[in-house]
Length: 177
Image 1 (cartoon, one colour):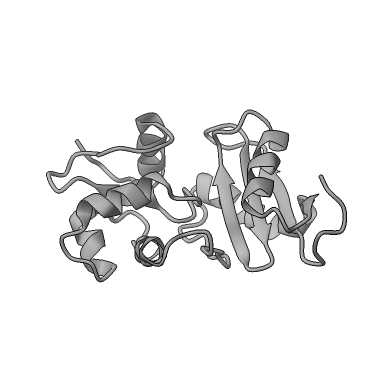
Image 2: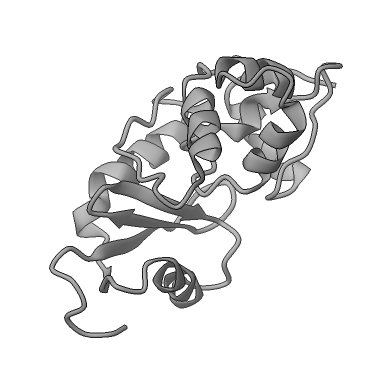
């Protein structure tokens, strides 16, 4: 990537083995800013991150984010219920930040409806808007949008595909229709 844009780079790394294959991670000076299991390569992921943070250097460095990688690995192995790590939600709108912060507080193994999450985010009645935010969650798994279901108790949608949502719910012993 480019040279000497900023003293505080975005660190890119990955968890090689997960139930979804490789999971790519980007950590800005403010915290975790992107998670993806959708990119075909770490280089393509880095290009997406560079588009979001054009003034910052991109540094490939698993060592600098090894704590986060270990936490994700522990989560997938069932040894960890909370992936606590500083988050960078600066790319989100104020409403999006409120929704994602509220979603981050949904406990392991718990589910909430889109309407309940809207209420927790301080915007009762905004369940459709919450669904839109969930579909653009830049930090899936870490911000557990897989714990958000429809008011009827059905699984609802998931940007990464329902097979991924079901797998994440199975890890947490969450049963839905």
